[in-house]
Length: 268
View 1 (cartoon, rainbow, N blue to C red):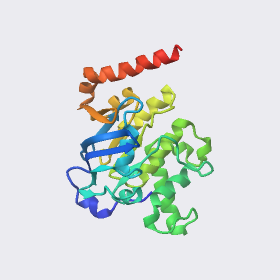
View 2: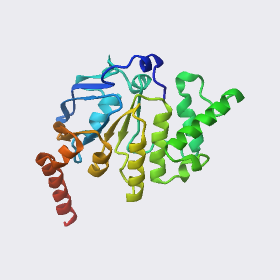
View 3: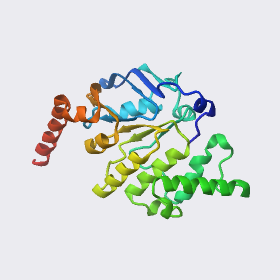
View 4: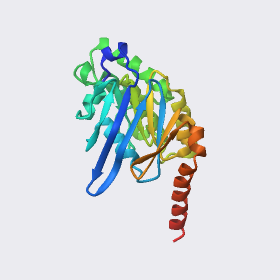
């Protein structure tokens, strides 16, 4: 992970993220179809939808893990449509993945020190000079404390629960000093207690960082978000405040229809 360009901190743009009519197909299947949206500074935006709606594909188009067939993505006013993930990270983007992407044998402290140092801050090393070691240790503790991991800072990642790994991933994203954090289904696989802790963590994040939350869990998304987008079959079908989305009959039909299908499947 790399830190954001410092010049963009002092020259903010109205929309840290702007997505314009992006589309992506796989063979004959259109996964994302002409989707557009903006993200305001400090905003919490949730992207909801049933399985197969195109949420993760849209997420990957935004971060650069996938290229768009058409459309544009702008980060802080710059067209990054053709740029890979690491170039977008340099412009202040951080992301997490549905599947934890940490090193089992490294400690929480080591993960956070590496994330904060970043490739553009010099050669990566877990054993820097003494003058930097104290700074890295202090920064790692600060980021661990922000997500509630200060008591487990010297635990290996393999010792953390699934919820603890999610906390670590959010802390690593924060350690890159981002303008925007993209969270890909962070509540997936969590117990009710872990889900509650994650929700509290997301609500506590500083508004200097904008958040895009791609989530299947409607309760988590509606609690955290200022604004919600809803996808179905790759298309944007609804947009509004959480209370508007919760009451939207089209959205309710999409989710109730999915639940009905799941119940039928479980009865076979």
